Image (cartoon, rainbow, N blue to C red; front, side, top):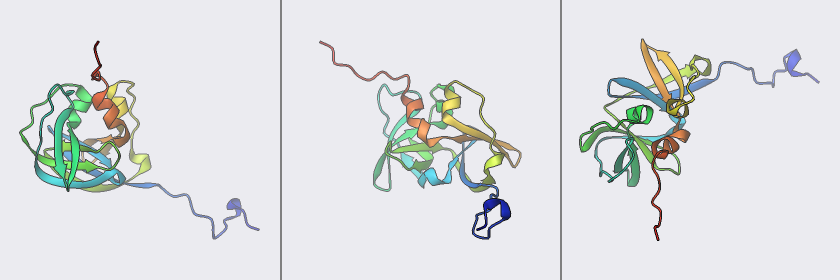
Length: 165
């Protein structure tokens, strides 16, 4: 019986782990999300604003029959509200139970990279929870957003309504 050390033909070789990223731009910055987290994209979607929402929450919009909460990727990192037009130029709809979408000024391309190309984020603050890593690609610094941390980051400072007696 052959073991992995002796090079069994049935043993998968450990090569570089390739990852697909979908890139997009907002406020002059380039962001990306893992390709597996993207449900789809849409152009020119009107957003219905939500009163008293956190800075990162733009409102709700409809993409392919689904109502999604639109988030501003820049505000997720800075915590400061940006002015967006009522019609968001580009929307990246994400998979998941949270039903989220990311607002963008433009779409980029799908990038296939090695997992080793992603730099770790050394930030314990808000950016550290939202950014899964940083990629330097084509002369640009691309922040890779973690879809699993977006909801918590967007609503972390928002106190839920409480019943007052």
